[in-house]
Length: 69
Image 1 (cartoon, one colour):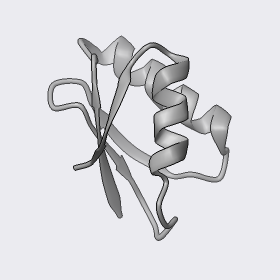
Image 2 (spheres, rainbow, N blue to C red):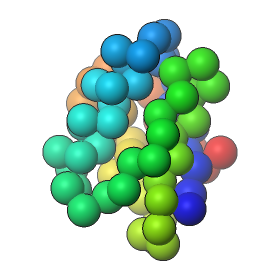
Image 3 (cartoon, rainbow, N blue to C red):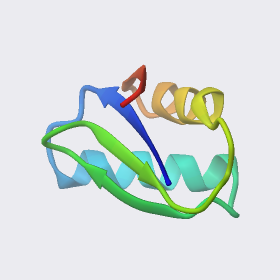
Image 4 (cartoon, helix red, strand yellow):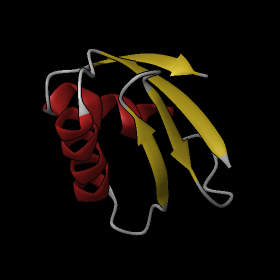
């Protein structure tokens, strides 16, 4: 499991947009949770460093990738 922080999420709709953007980057990623209140993205499994992928997905939908949580 890995966690990453993203800024700019305000609601569940924002969280869903980010989750979909992550899945567009790589359909094999298991996105366990995107918490709009904390900005924490939880990725399941042992996928290695997904920071660049999360950053690209966040930018695609107008959010700011901060880094590992």
